[in-house]
Length: 485
Ligand code: B12
Ligand code: SF4
View 1 (cartoon, rainbow, N blue to C red):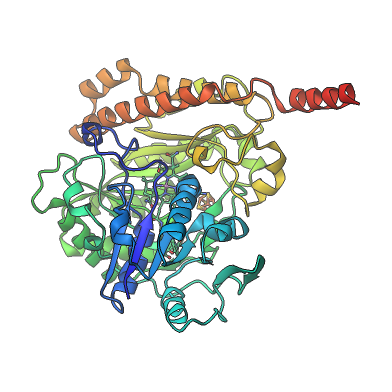
View 2 (tube, rainbow, N blue to C red):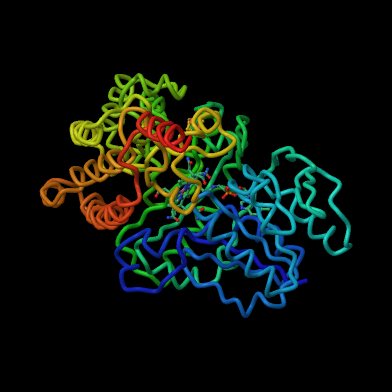
């Protein structure tokens, strides 16, 4: 049995000197989720291998005689994923299986491009599917969907796995070891899945559920050690940093402390950053442990800076609490990175400058700014699906894709560009070199170029964005109907 795994990119991989300096143009870190599944499959089927367009081209030659090809898609990679799946269906005899957040949440769309879509997390359902395919049987347990003579069949979403103690075997990913000399990719470990909150726009809580499942501290430590080793051996990395990518690592406080104690006891000397909600900023004991374990930065999903937006999307936060939390985190010697959304119904023209002022005033060191976007299956999508400009998923990578209430899409995209330009200005770059520590000098410089490339893409998209707001659009359409009548 020859089994291959493919992670399509938002755009295909292209080798260029820029990949050494600019993250996210043609280079990104490969999927830990798909790598985990490949690791599970490899135990039973030795001829298993993975390609990720984040770090290499996909050699179609190797896929020609594969028996099963698994393709993973997030929304931003769906168009490219469908393109690859269509090509492989036409040019190979392999059974094509799609999965991942977008395929699972948009199953009726994805099923048109492959033989099976796998629903939810694949850890416990992937081996049974391979067996069914080998035995030429149709699935009769939860977790699968397919088309038969044009009719849609689904066995429903499976129960999420409880035991997720799998260490992804990075050596299964083509070209990965070679690419670890690029400072624009970095080690990452995913320690838990699920989040007890329920923000309206969040696809994750729909995909992984509200019940938090955790890996054991021992398993996480082993993974961290392996991951660091994989990146460091044979390289001279300037920035030594491992990213714990959980969405809400601190949801189970007791477990989070156990993991931090385990890192301290293991003697691992490395730098870590981690995603967090603002509440952790009020937990002094946790902050002290984080510092002791080598964490230097918390990546806070702040999203909005006005209380009205928090209320609109049921994000349990307030601006005042967030600012208080940031101050306390910084007092403990940790820096804060902000993850933001622009384009809520409550925001108006000028929100880009307001965001930049907030970031600068609160000394937030690094930002990801993303336009509001709605993923099918989320409450925010149901409420806003009539306001999408298009469903070209390839553009759902930070661009404006909807009609905001109080601006035109064109204006919203300009606000994003404005915020990025103000935060990553040359003056602030010089300031970082004069005032920040070594780590943040390097990080700010890298992000300065990353944001420059992001702004270039955002500007390129401007010409496609409507310069009218939703009401003007509806009125114009009504006038056209009247006129034609
Ligand atoms: C690490 C990370 C990144 C990394 C690496 C991404 C990667 N290659 O996986 C980097 C930094 C590159 C990144 C970038 C971006 N990201 Co990101 N990222 C994440 C993060 C935090 C963790 C991913 C992860 O490891 N998950 C854990 C594993 C276990 O889950 P998984 O990958 O989904 O896999 C499991 C299941 O889904 C399933 N599965 C997955 N694939 C398949 C395939 C088959 C065949 C089967 C059967 C099952 C299956 O089984 C796996 C194991 O259970 C997620 C949030 C999250 N929790 O997922 C956001 C997330 C994936 N990112 C997101 C976004 C939007 C982006 C950006 C567009 C942000 C931006 N504006 O720049 C960019 C896009 C990059 C690009 N241009 O291509 C969104 C995607 C939303 C969506 N609807 O698709 C997420 C979900 C965050 C969010 N809060 O919404 N990201
Ligand atoms: S807190 Fe974060 S991960 Fe949890 S539901 Fe809200 S946005 Fe999603």
